[in-house]
Length: 599
Image 1 (cartoon, one colour):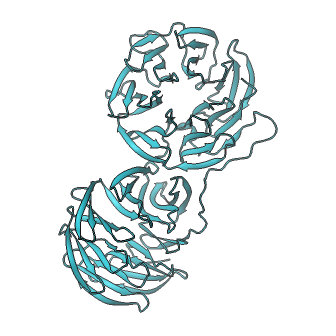
Image 2 (spheres, rainbow, N blue to C red):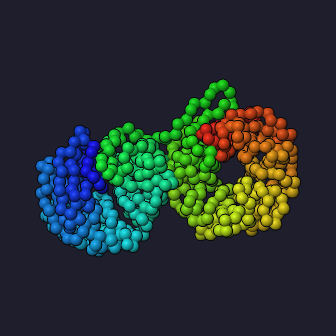
Image 3 (cartoon, helix red, strand yellow):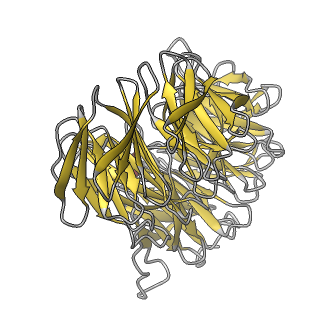
């Protein structure tokens, strides 16, 4: 539907019949069904905020010239103009709709306006330069965010006093869930911060694709879905992302024809309107019932090694990793879509967790309740019960995450040095955030971690070692060369967590990590950049980096007993904990192979 230039905010009436679009000098009232402009209201100074009573009987507008106007939507006429004074910002409507709370950025205050009596009944001092505001559905609390001090003020509406404060940087918008249990805040580049409004604590964070900019939020009336309008997701495109609020899984992502500025839902949640610079987009949201959004092809019955292929995006192999829950019932795959969660037994999609695009490495802790992955900010920790980011540990470039220590207290990672040289093998304390360098590593090393997290193996010569593979104590940093590993460039730890497998262009080895002795050695493979071992260690799985196939090799004599199709340019390989399924992430997607024939 066409609207005036510079539309800034939008509000849909509870019954969905009318849409109000704020413009530079007034408001366009639009028939939502026909997209026709019913009337245009001029507001002196231009509008700065909009809100409606829950029953839709009154619409309130704040203006830059210091007035709150009350509109009767049936008559289409302004019934009251209330002088507040000064420049006004956004407003929030109290529980029953009688009281309106309007920000006063120049006065560092929130004005409480009785719209029935047409008077200002209180002025509440808040954090300086209030720019965003929201009220709980019952009207008992109002949350105002001040730009100068980057913090929230919590107002008790029974006494009109500030009863709490919460620092939070770079807020761009606030949305309350209809049940009042959660507050969703646009904060920082690409981040949605989830708050518990009663406790005023941060529950976690939802990330958006790297470079994307969420601009507006809305929650469905049944609390089931969070709608996120995203500006510029890449290539000049814009999107509406739909998340399941109970799991935080991405349900759907729609491309929008115009750059959105604000979104609003009708009272029944069936209609969403997104405003943009010269238009408003109307979207039918009645079809979102939840579920995953990852396409999966059915297994081919021709044979046990024909792969099921799960789509991960065209460049999945460039940034991908695979992790499992301790019980093995779920597989987590990092991809350009986020973290894709699959049911291990069927490869059926459970959901997609919103993260930065192309997060790369992914490791799951021993309890299965947390996952960690590197981002441009450092290392982020994801709570797998809520699917929210709960911790961020700033660091230099993270090249590789090996895994958690056995007690889950630390992460072992390869982290770039400040001098731009090779990455250092490091330990990240998840309680203090302290990063301890264990040993210098070569550029682009191959790494493997024992099951108990006590020893890391580095493929590629490191300082003071002189060996192609070096064992590093993850507590002390002490290094032990592994003799007989010349030419080994790719490493993998067996499912038992005690047997190390290595391969290079000319040689392959099997190492007992108890004493770092060579158990088996033999011929290598020229293009094996990845490696996994069968449950007993009798077979090795080595994808070819170029031709899109995977070789199954006997560990004792190096015989290739099977060649399986996967995909070009593999980026990750992992064997499920039960040893029955092998996962290979490549440019063609995630190949899931039944490898029970290769114990």
